[in-house]
Length: 238
Picture 1 (cartoon, helix red, strand yellow):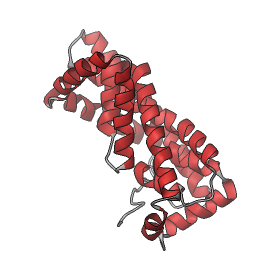
Picture 2 (cartoon, one colour):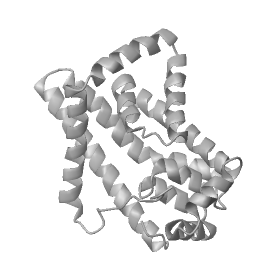
Picture 3 (cartoon, helix red, strand yellow):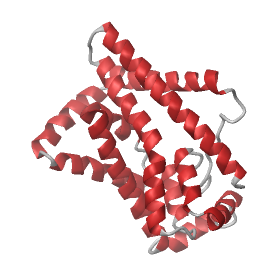
Picture 4 (cartoon, helix red, strand yellow):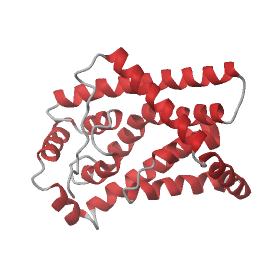
């Protein structure tokens, strides 16, 4: 597959405050516009009715849907935002972490078993993967943690690529879970805040939601910058 690791980190050569604030505000604006001008709110309301009819099983259904998207390379960003809008910060965070980590673990295992030959063909001769493999051989799951903190490689593709490296399943799963926390919290909070702002409420509440989401995303981006720098220092070109 062309561009297996084709994600460039544009933040490294910019100053943190201005660039980070702009990116955070852009993320909030996009989420707000999605909920305001697309029928996402209606979809979520319909989905919420269906999920509520399932009781506690609805959380599991959402998480499994998320994991399927991860395995089949389907971007799940809208599901992350939707989880925040549907379940709030705590519930949305739990659903997304369960779904993303389940999908990540399954992709990892598929790359080590049934799909190994295919994934090897996709990564063969790729200098970025070779550097990643060498770094993992030296640093172990620390590199997995850094890659999760700084999404310098596409999440769905890197799950399979990690399956070809020497990292053990246990440390891989733990590093993935911990490394995903900052970004997941950020996006779920954005979904929660955007839904609250788009569906009404007082001006003060709307402003607080937007400022809170912007601050959360700013911290998330800052952590990603630090992790990206550490990845480069480990010899992997992000």
